Image (cartoon, helix red, strand yellow):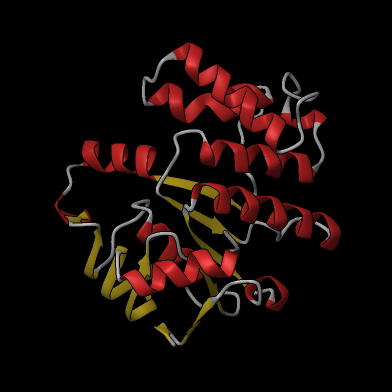
Length: 236
């Protein structure tokens, strides 16, 4: 099924995976209050591919962190399916992040002391999944992202594009329902960036996983069937 067909089917079904209502988030900078989000409401259907666009400082990363349970809003609600994230205990919220959400960051955030396979398998180890099956799946994912000959390499032995491929594989190891990618091509040259996006969209389409990408790049945003603009703390 094509990318557009998957997203069209998701949009017509009305099967909402995650919804945010009237989100507010502010930070204190010395004596000054910086309001990053001022009442953002957003819903994403299962299987949808959505791009969040906005200038640097518009709140894209903040919104992704809230949707993924990495941070909590100062106001508003976030529901994942029928689950209110605000009602989860810290332990339950950590389990939610581990099992339901795959994160891909601009700076990769892979651990320097672990090799590629160990980095990919880490979320599954934390979830205490079967060790043998975890390693098998980790190897399969690294082969899928073109790193079959780099599994035992440490991050310092990998290029930026290869490190981001490790991050993509790691995000998929627990078969999450939602992938949140924060400027996933921001530290890559344009050619490598396109390769990473092609790979991510291909893997996502195979599993019909919901994908939300935050980006300021018009070329990347144009590949999404739906784009939400963030400006002045609001979604448009």
